[in-house]
Image 1 (tube, rainbow, N blue to C red):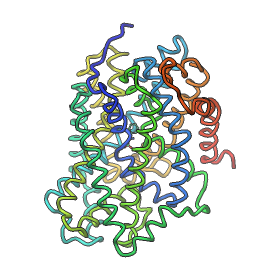
Image 2: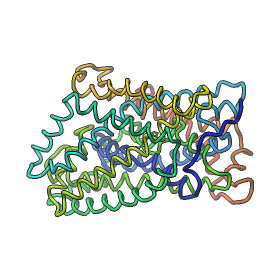
Image 3: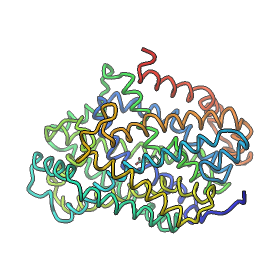
Length: 452
Ligand code: PHE
């Protein structure tokens, strides 16, 4: 196969790499998924386990993906094919492509919601509403059919529009400016949320671990959330890694991206849980949590109108910088492995994903009674990707790097062929080879009840 160069506009600088990878990591996973999953899994204890996973397994898998991608200079499937020719390792890449389908299908549902809320914010739709009315507004929207589908479609088209151009300088430039702004807005909202009467209950919920709440399920959810939030386990960072120059210090990049991701998730929790308790809501309200909580904060703060507009705008952008990384996994595969043009690959795969996406969106209305093992279609896709496909992908990625590609390749990549030192090299290799695979498998078996 010829080494066809994919247009790789964005990754021209060190900061561009971090911006793109952090753009992928930071998204609805932090602001929508983290609070609702933490809320359903007891809060503080969940947070602790979540952070533990990020620092050990999560960062190792992230670095592993960067290494594989940069070494192979290929898409997720092609990377395995190139580094282990004639072996079945490409299946891991293929699984990643399946995961990308699944993730984008349900992620675009929520991304569509952010557009609806942006429009509501622009139209001053939250003003004068109490918590009950705001919840009702969400339920009405969610159970309707046309608007959620329409917004989902708009979102998919936008994602495709960016990918079709290649990941251009535009995205790098905008993420660089917009992500810091998003953090600033979240901090302002945290302050408002923390100063609401009764806020301390929310702070306790998030930061005071109640160890009696820990179970196999909670641990699996924390693992799944850490993978989902860091964009690992499905080749998004292998693909992005293939666009990283040889002189980039991969361990540093990994650390920076992981920290940005974690800080934003924690801030999202600080923004949301005090308000949840202040407005007498339930932390385990599920997928609608942030949409039902955030508008209350806006109505309770001076300048709420402008903050609401900016916030939902930035949330949409954060979602978009994540969805492009997911679509790029599939499109890069289409270009390099199926010899499609970028345009063709984008159109074909976006359409296919959108079809699955319709079912995800309709799970909240027409198809809400349709359950698979007690989950709606949306719930199944969400669960399947975070708790099964990503951790499974992660296991194979670390095994591949630790046991198949081997130490020399790892050392070459993390030290840039001996030019720089890596501090935790031994620890990293140990985690790759032993801790991560065993831990992930144990967590999974425990959660599905095999270990009793
Ligand atoms: N990490 C993204 C988020 O937190 C979602 C994502 C998952 C992106 C998997 C790529 C791969 O929103």
